[in-house]
Length: 212
Image (cartoon, rainbow, N blue to C red; front, side, top):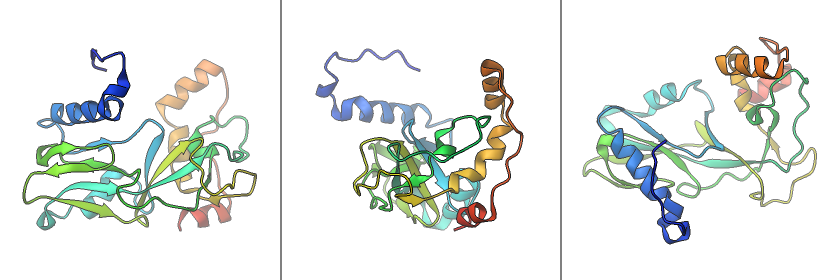
């Protein structure tokens, strides 16, 4: 975290200071990282077929296409929806308990997030790169390959905020068992003195939905 000296009236800054912080972050990493991910704290980039973001990028970062940024469409997992029932010993990760989302997927450049090659960028925005070095291009990655899962309230537009409404999407659950064996969960177990299983078996239906 950088000790920025910000004006008291954040409304006087473009996008409440996001533009300044995003561009500062990317430029600081320009000579140390190959990629920079621009995403909010309540958003999770979730590949649909690949497991990791690195695997996803390797399939879309084709050298001859001179790709410099990769834009991902977004969908909302509304926290107003009732959460899925999970055993009490499972840590309450919102990505695992909230499996109902709006069926609407935002179009490209509306609430999208992206990955950028910092040395190919001139100016970045909140939802996509504004300007790249000449000769380099922005890639719009299809929603069938990846989605940004946005977990928050008051963004639902379809009025489906009751149990068994919305679209069930369990794609993020492919990460659950790896999370259960992570160091973060081991710290969580010690802090709250709870016993957490090391593995959870999903029903055939859930696994089938995960593969869609």
